[in-house]
Length: 109
Image 1: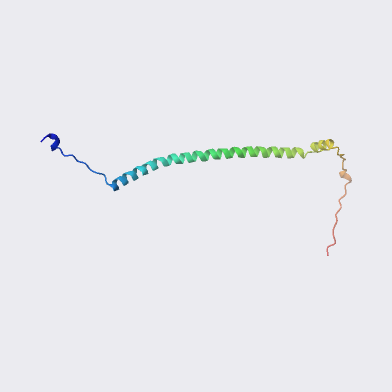
Image 2: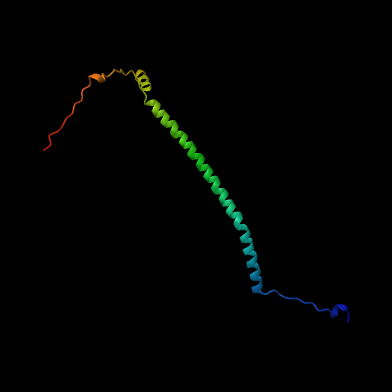
């Protein structure tokens, strides 16, 4: 007998349950390792969205301030008198020292 014939070869076939356990373990480890990456990506997306919303709020606040300034400017006497001159509307001073207060009461029955 040759040496090759006398050696014992040990082979073992992996069963279905063992394969299933190994595959499940590999998938669990893969999922466990990918979870922090997914969370970081989600946090990054949310932070970018929040930064965009904050920029929009700043722009809208600036527009609101401009509109308030425009309204305040348009309600001044100079603007009203200039608009009256442009539209040929005569303005007259109202003598407030000669104004009288009139109170009208209805008959209460």
